[in-house]
Length: 136
Length: 316
Image (cartoon, rainbow over all chains, first blue to last red):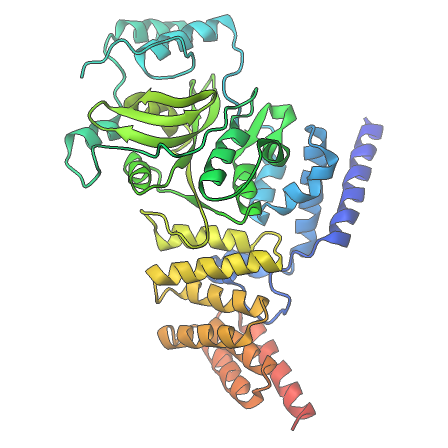
């Protein structure tokens, strides 16, 4: 348990180092320029002050993506392409958010229900269900 | 047990599913054409579980990006989830210097975009909320008379869905639909708020010189439709500043000052640019205006003013 925790910590730590060394996320180099995002959304006011926190979240997400099977060479670029808001949501819900896959296998009961709803036109899971009832 | 009961009830109802928005589109007259199809939209058949990269490739290629499927798989596919997440789809669009514009969540907005020549990347739940089958596809056409939606979907190059069924499956993602735009184009149903949110998101991710020039163009595009929009004027100035084009930046902030004389942030940014141009007295005047207007960024305005005054002492 402890070993697993430590390993995770080490992973996040090393990823954080990568982020700190490579990344510069401040949208405005000069502290005195007001950024466009700040005008649109005043919650971005504290951007500079939460910079370190944001980097921590990014490193955490990178570690999670690594565990999820993403090629380590892709981690940095994938996390960099996300906004702070998106990073926050993904860090907390990587396992719950909808993941578009196309059709996955299903259990028998689920199969029967989806077959029925497919026939009725509430769902569209099975390609072999042709819409024969067309009242137009 | 409850699920079996539900099944029984569903089987007893013999009528075909009908969806409210589709019903309304069919019955009330509108300025939508009866049918439209963007037949020249490319097609990338999906490999196992990879409808996300396939739909992305379709939309990006249509918008003029030269891309292959394997690159996109590396950018968005999440092996442990056997699929792709919405945020990563948006992020990938941004990585290719395109704007992911999130359309208004309804059927009319979807069909208007398609009629105007923008295929829409959608997320559907083809199953039910408790047995989800999440799926990305690209809507490329519709036929109101036949009550059909036409998609590039999965391994079907021209997949035809019953419009009511499509609406029900799309509603389960809360009508998530994305137009992939180059910086020069506006969506047909564009709202300033939605468009600018997409540009600001581009600005809030890792930026490079090339990216800043895309952002700059997008703000110009926004101003062509909403000439007095404060965010677009600020964005134009800020992106010009990032590109080192101080004259363009100063002009953008002057336009913003003219249209929005009570926004301290605009005076502040104008002051910063003027200072860097060496016009210290003019800069001081603008910075004082910002400080006088106060507001949430007062600290920054004071910092700007102090910096200008320091410079004035060095170069009297």
